[in-house]
Image (cartoon, rainbow, N blue to C red; front, side, top):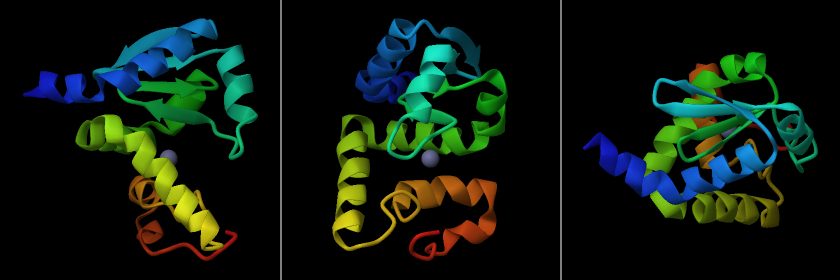
Amino acid sequence: MRWLRYLWAAPNTLIGITIGLLLGGRVEWVSGVAEIHGRWIARGLRSMPVPAAAMTLGHVVLGCTIGDLERTRRHERVHVRQYERWGPFFLPAYLGASLVLRLMGRDAYRGNPFEIEAYAVDDPSAVTYPRRGV
Ligand SMILES: [Zn+2]
C-alpha cells in the first residue's frame, strides 16, 4: 500500500518537484524522498516569513544545501509522514492552524501542531506547547 501514500501526497509532491526544478535545484533520492537543493532554492527558503533551511512538499524536501538536508532530515521526514496522512488537505490544515494561532496571538510556527510533532523528534521536550514568542 506504499504506492497509495505516494498517490495521496502526489499533488503536493508535484508542487515540490515543479518549484525545485524551476529553481534549478539538484535532485537526490534519499530513502524514497526527492531531496532538492540549490542556490535559488536557498534564496527562496531564506526569504520566507519564517526563514527555513528546508521545507517539505509531499515526497519532496527542498533544502538550502546538502548539509541542511542532512541536518533537518528527521524533522522533515515527520512532515513527509504528515503529507502521507493528510494528502491534499495537509497544506490547508497546516496554514489554517497557523492562521488560527496567529489570530489567537500565539506563535503561528512553533505552536502549530504539525511543527510540534516534527520538533518532537529533534527534541523530545518540545512535545509540550512552546512559550509564546520563543
Ligand atoms: Zn517543520
